[in-house]
Amino acid sequence: MNTRTDYKKTGLNTIYGNRGMGLETEINETNQYYLIHDIAVIHKKPTHVTIKKVDYHSRVDAIIKEAYFKTPSTTDYNGVYKGKYIDFEAKETKQKTTFPLSNIHKHQIEHLKKIVNHGGIGFIIVRFTSLNQTYFLSAVDLFAFIDSNKRKSIPITYFEEKGYLIKDKYQPRVDYLAIIDKILEGEVNEKSN
Amino acid sequence: MNTRTDYKKTGLNTIYGNRGMGLETEINETNQYYLIHDIAVIHKKPTHVTIKKVDYHSRVDAIIKEAYFKTPSTTDYNGVYKGKYIDFEAKETKQKTTFPLSNIHKHQIEHLKKIVNHGGIGFIIVRFTSLNQTYFLSAVDLFAFIDSNKRKSIPITYFEEKGYLIKDKYQPRVDYLAIIDKILEGEVNEKSN
Figure 1 (cartoon, rainbow over the protein chains, first blue to last red):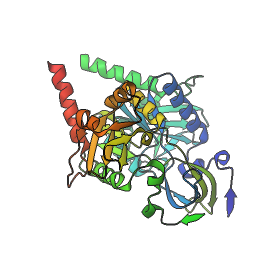
Figure 2: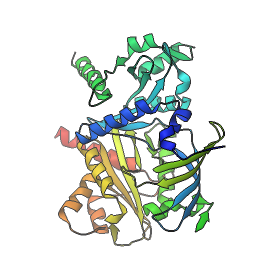
Figure 3: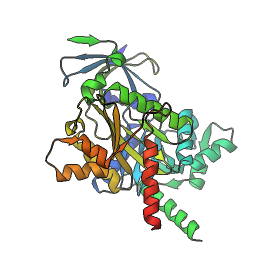
Figure 4: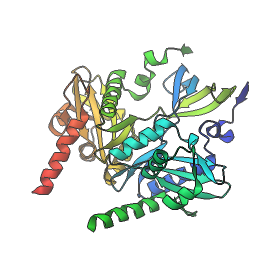
């Protein structure tokens, strides 16, 4: 049995969620940028854990001595932008030509379906680390792929065709709200036609 | 040092958040009701913890051996209802005539301010356990009280005047969306005048 005391450095998330710290850190920084600049309020949810045993002297210095990771039943990120409910999951893959759907839990996809049904904006952000390309794919296009394919991975061409490339920027790092602006503008245009 | 193995039963949350398990459990059941009946998608966020040490054999059987409770920087509950972003905090008090503001962290109030500024629906649910009365108070009315008072607790008369009593029901237990419906109807009426 290994004992890892350097939890943060070793990035256990990579082991569990198949999610590199690179993209996650950059999205956290992006959300921080949005928050500070009063653009949006979007947070990463805390890691889902089941707490079993707690030692404590007082209210302040409690130590959790036994806990377990839980499979998340929702996506990792949600919040509000221009009054709209925002909900998404972010994943990295080392693959160069496809994104394996096994990266996203079934109940996370179910969750995104409910979000869209209730008028929220749902999407995934996928980074192909080998290519250094990061895509925004709306949940609706994700469902469309799943419903019309038996493939267990989404080819990168689908991201190129249906998704949006998120350009690398200095600040904010992963400016996904710029994509949502485009989509919302499209909505407005459609409605005004 | 006590070792509590019956974490769930002892309700450590009471110690930390000054929040009884009664209201929390009932709100979780209510959210489950909303989810199953396809009314809204609102979840409680996982407990905020900082993980320091993890023992693991494999991906599946990891045990968190050392972790600490963190002060939450956001509220506990958020989600989507009729396309609107919903965000709230729920608290119980044993007081009969006032609700001590110390129950809500300063950054939770700051968080609610940002939510409202970005067009979300923010509020608190407060239960006076001795009276068995549960109130809905909009974040706007919460800020109004804080800004115009130096008192460190909100008198129950303020909840009676500005808030909404949430009636006890069999299902859903704490039907706070019924209050939001009233508020949204009011909005529509105002707009149509």
